[in-house]
Image 1: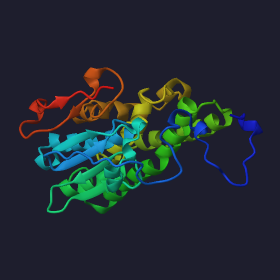
Image 2: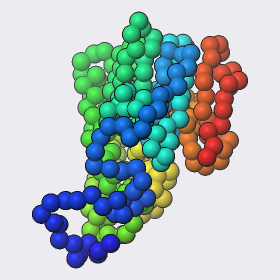
Image 3: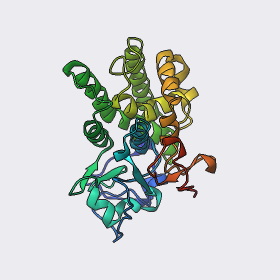
Length: 291
């Protein structure tokens, strides 16, 4: 691979698998299924096909928050999609999410299944379905949705930008790391200034905006992403730290962030089917994800 300072883009780009680095076996410039594979379907209203990445955690945290409030209609089967193995390119998964990204949800609670893909869309679907975590009044609703969409637009700079070039790229490129570190710190400052004004992103109440932002920026603030906490001086963002700690202590957040997780202590990896009954006793059918 050429040094970035020596690279001159060709007139027409040609895909070179060898340039893919850590993700060379799964990244490709075309869409669609690469193989036939049907998805499993369980007995619960919500069928989630995902992985315990920040985007995946958003949905399992949301489902766990709904269950904690007693919404039995949020019971779900969490099916593991190993994106490193290319599960997201199976025909069954692509039929739910043509973009081949986790998470993907099939809402089977009604007469006809409803597919929902993109994590922000899933959060909105669930919030509107169950009438919680999304304000009804116009002003707080607008604030909530603004921060939700802020996350959807900003996180690619953190994950695909800073995270990729700092942690995953096959070569360290100073310009790329500096560019995305600067933008990530700017985003942290945006959050810090907002959280200096209010307890949560949309105001006094915890909403889907917090559920969406926390796995990315709360995780970064607590040193859980890319090993980049010291590099970015995340401790300097004191209001983000306060907010991140507050949300991390929620039982549903603790539970949701380990579903379909593949890294860390196996005791903190959970692939679980929820059963009816008391929320605190829904552990009888758990299966550790493992790798």
